[in-house]
Amino acid sequence: MMNILGIETSCDETSAAVVADGVTIRSNVVASQIPLHQRWGGVVPELASRQHIERLLPVVIEALEQSSLDLPEINGIAVTNRPGLLGALLVGVCGAKSLAWAMSVPMVGVHHLDGHIASAWLTEPDVEFPFLCLLVSGGHTELVLVMDRRKRFSLGRTRDDAAGECFDKCARAMGLPYPGGPAIGKSAAFGSPNRIPFPRPLLNEGLEFSFSGLKTALIRFLSEDGGKTSVEDIAASLQAAIVEVLVEKAFRAVKTVGVNTLCVAGGVAANQELKRQLMARANQMGVRCVIPPPILCTDNAAMIAAAGAVRLLAGERDSLHLDTIPGEPIPQLETAELRR
Image (cartoon, rainbow, N blue to C red; front, side, top):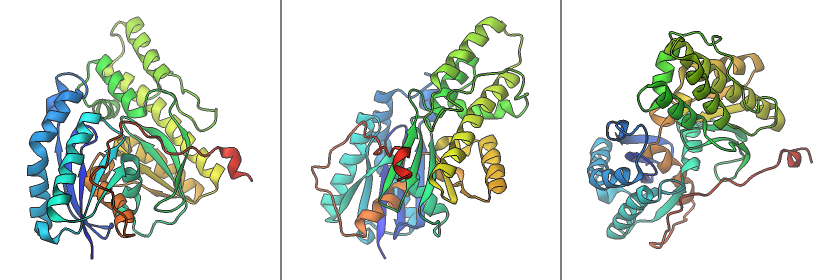
């Protein structure tokens, strides 16, 4: 058995986890920075980095304690080294390098989105390949064809704002607290999704996304409405627009690539209305839909350990010169290639 210590510090969550053989979670500790950033209505990169420095070691210790393992029983380390906030990534990578050197164990860097994809087989170990993954979070909205645990291609991504970013920015304009996604979801439960006809950007155009125009439409509506419409109705109408686009594009991609399984990953996957509509459509189409529990949707180290296990179990390792990369897209696969 290979016990892998995962470390995740790509944004504002300091997380460490221990996963056995890439599929069995022995611990998964997440220290959130939400209270720190609420004052500013979003993540402040410098503050996030400083908080990671303070929390990383205590979080690693807690993850080891919860796993009932000691450091000598850890056989490898997986750490997010791309993409993300550069300062935040540096904290996690430096910590991982120090531990790997001191313990004389192999270390691998992990692409953050590969971590989200790996949450699929952490949730359903028997998930069949290939499958389609809808990655939807604060920083990413993307449709990914996952061929196996190592090979994946992007079918389409957002041209501008991610869905989670749209939620956050719109919530701030509406006077709702950060993070915006959960705040809008709670308000939307008491509103009418048909009250305001917000646009559905690129709904009938391919597999790419765009949410900046929806944000602009909401800000324009707030200015013209003058407070006459309830926050609940605005939230429900906004959520309906975002969810409809995500659901339609996801199942369009399922049909395009001809797979039978849709996996959803990223923080927005915890949205209850999105989950409800995805499951309903999947049942109608006879498609298996895998949605991780909330702890595996948001940023966490268990998913990083699961993704890193693929390389570690194959005998691979990165050197202590492992670099941090703020941006690295998943390779694009044009849909035309699928028809050949």
